[in-house]
Image 1 (cartoon, rainbow, N blue to C red):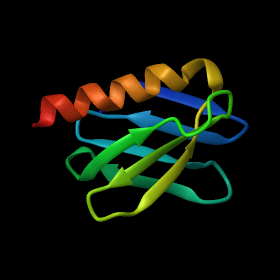
Image 2: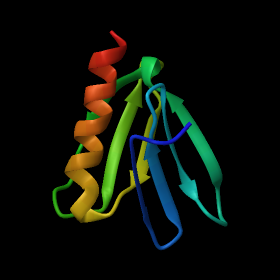
Image 3: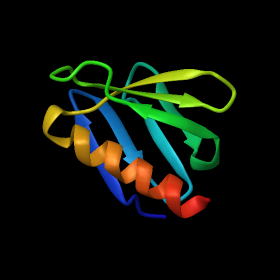
Image 4: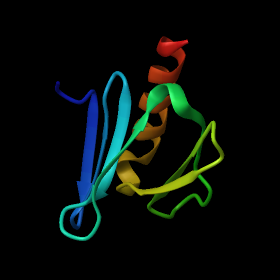
Length: 86
């Protein structure tokens, strides 16, 4: 399945699919996946910093590195997929 939106920067990758968000580092962490149905909040904690925080319904917080110019599009795409899945 092709992602709806994807971005990468210095080996960090993030992608939004209709049913999940994936992120990770090409060499360091591998790829992690968060089901859209388990996302509670998407936050831009520090404007001007290349990070998006996603909190799950279980309370776990994921820090995702996203290119600054793609940050708002990434957040909006995740929010749109959350709205569609309800």
